[in-house]
Length: 302
Image (cartoon, rainbow, N blue to C red; front, side, top):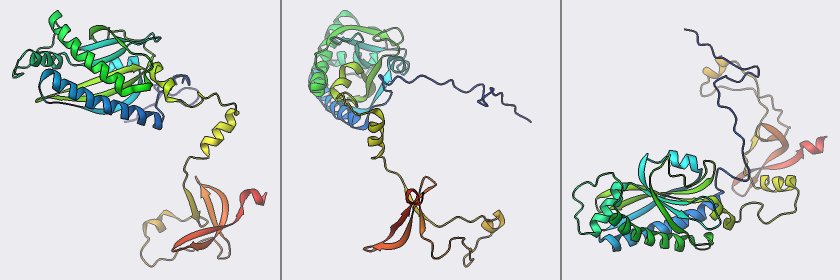
């Protein structure tokens, strides 16, 4: 059977994904140091939330932070169940809203424990009544206080409750392309395990994380790039000249075979990076380890 692949004039498969424009003002990944700061903050929040739930509903509860990432709101909403509990919060000076999301059956079990239920029966998946909303509001007030405490100076202004939504596709907490800092949690309340998320508009947190370039450096972009590249680790190899051999020789290699190398004994070894020769070095030693002593560079030969 012959499979024909349709290609464009440039040789690109016709069904290949079209390129997407990258907006440098809205990064799609978090810098490592920024991610670490946020992970520590949400770890603190998770411990606080678990302690608050235990005190509020009188059932041993534990919340664990699993990951922190930056997603567009559309990506975040697409990863949620169609029907779920979403508590929206206003963020001062930001058009998008923050979200604390959790399954509605889990929230109903919390309310049931507050009212004295044992939690033996599975809670249904439905909207909250006014009484349930009032009780859940007390839990959310505690969670919001814990979030403010954990984020500290990362969140300049306090958030305020806005509404409760039940459909992740119609909640409209933010525009589709708005970047959100999304933290994912696992909640263990008694014997019940449920996932939860917290999503905060990136514009409310990233400015306090001192992103690259926020200090207003006057250095030319090329110089800034060279400065960053100078700290990227690369593999440096000390090599002999390669020789061409036939596949039969490679397949029949055995202990004791001798390969005649094309590298003269008096010539230094090649110093290569990424397959490109940058210099030559003589074999030497540094303490108990082998070392290469640079004897020439490609620039000095020109």
